[in-house]
Amino acid sequence: MSRLLEKYKKGIVPELQKDFSLKNRMAVPRLEKIVINIGAGEAIQNIKLLDTAKQELSLITGQWAATGRAKKSISSFKLRKGHAIACYVTLRGKRMYEFFDRLVNIVLPRVRDFRGVSPRSFDGRGNYTLGMKDQLVFPEIDYTKVEKSRGMNITIVTSAETDKEGHALLKKLGMPFREEA
Image (cartoon, rainbow, N blue to C red):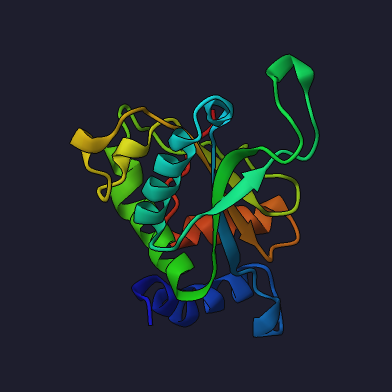
C-alpha cells in the first residue's frame, strides 16, 4: 500500500469525518483520479513533437500516454478534425497516490519562487486544477535530452461535493496552499 494511501485511511478519514460531522466513512471525500494533460498545438506541423511529449509524460507518470485529437476543425489555426494535438494520462488507484505524493513532496518544492499553490483553482465541485509551466521540475526528466519546455495541466478529481471539502482533503493530504490575504 502506498504511504499516502495508508496515511489517508488511518489518519485523514477520521479527521475529515469529525470535521464535517459525517456518520458514514464512505461519505468522506477521497481522491478519484488524477489527469495530466500536455497540449502540443505545434504538433500540427511536426508530429515528432507529440511523440516526445508522450514519452516525457510516460516517464513522469509511469503509465503510457494516450493521444488527444481535435474535435472540430478551426481554419485560423490550420487545424483539421481528428488531428493529434495533445497527450494525456489518467491515473487511478496506487499510481495516483504515488504520483500525488511525489507531486507534493518532491516536484512542487523544486518550482522556482514557489510560495504555495493557489486555493482559487477549484471548479465548484471539489476538483482542483494545477498548471505547471515546465516539465523539468520532475526528477524523471533528463535535462540534457529536453528539446522544448512544455507546460502541463494536472487535474485532481475528488469525490468532494463542495470546494470547502475538496480544499480540506487536499490540505490534509499535504498540498501546500498559499495563504490568501
